[in-house]
Length: 114
Length: 110
Image 1 (spheres, rainbow over the protein chains, first blue to last red):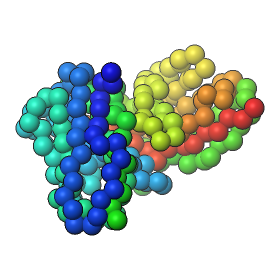
Image 2: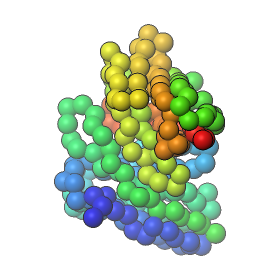
Image 3: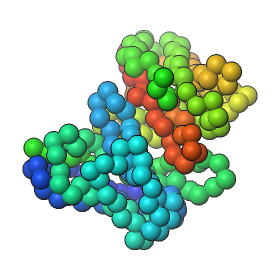
Image 4: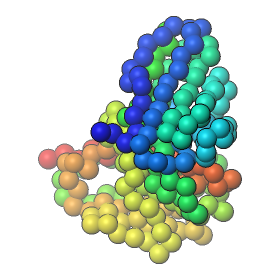
């Protein structure tokens, strides 16, 4: 079984719809992250969390919200989806430590907003 | 200057070739550096960390030049399976998250 899972894997939605992307992990890591990846722009950080109920904005948080109610789960919401939120979304986890450790990514969610 | 810059490529090389990727970063206070690999439509995975003294893992060698704020990745004896996008990664200025370069695409052909 995968250590970091994301649901759904693919989603097509319409402008104005609310959508939630889920991330679950079995690695026992405290830190979790949401990124989006666009062609030519690379991976950009949306939100991150270092513990349950700890929420921090990343580089591009506008239009998104997150929830961390349990260590193993970190959900990303688009309250009112717009076409420029069409992208590949990745969740990642990292073990808490003094220095930076490896981040483990989920398989990604491909979101299309029409 | 963007936080992390890479030559996007693509680099098209034959099997057995040696290829080098370069990356520059803007935050002189950065302490941690990495190379990640991403296959087409897949998630990024850690290839190797980059240490101040330079480090090697099989055919892969990473170098760090703090004075020039420059990171490199050398791949020797390229294999078809090395075809992927290589992401240069630096810890952000606040020390709280990773900043990814846009990636350099490598295509190895037979």
